[in-house]
Image (cartoon, rainbow, N blue to C red; front, side, top):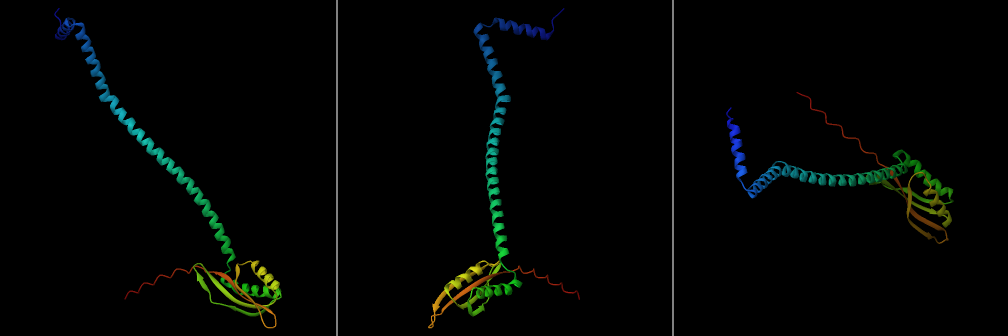
Amino acid sequence: MEKSATSKKLDELFERVEALTKIQRILICAGVFILLIVLFGSFSFLPNWKKIGKLNMDYKKLSADLDKSKKNARKLAKLRKEFESKRRDFNRVMKSLPESEEISSLLTGISESGQESGLEFLLFRPGKEVNKNFYAEIPVAIRVAGGYHNFVQFADRVARLSRVVNIRNIDMSRNKAGQLTTSCQAVTYKFIEAAPPKAAKKKKKKK
């Protein structure tokens, strides 16, 4: 039975290999081995190595972004605490500012504090309001006659009023009769409510 063409070619290949010297066989094996390494590196190792490098870069970037986000989160928590503290302070101050309808009673309270302290009012004149954004200052020119301790008691009573009142520009002097008179300015504050938005202009009626 005759051999097939493939078998004949294999026989010829083996014969050629057997005819080679040992060194030639070693070189051929080494070349095949190197070729396999090159093919493995080109089609498997290098692409994976590039992917690993890209993943490392992405990991470093994500780590940096995460650290930045953590820092921002800590800052945000701190800012929220500061905001809450400022908001509480603002609300506390707002409660100390009288509404418009309370001004008359507050001025009466200042006057009564002076009388209860044994002072004689020579002048009690509210001045013009001075707008300060969301509040207004209401200065009251005061001149009283009475002892030093009486005035100190008056200032203490005013400081303990439920609403904010400041005593400033204090000037004490004695007249020819030796009576002590004190001029000062009591400044109280009024909360200014935000003006309501202007109503939209009515559309012109169609002719």
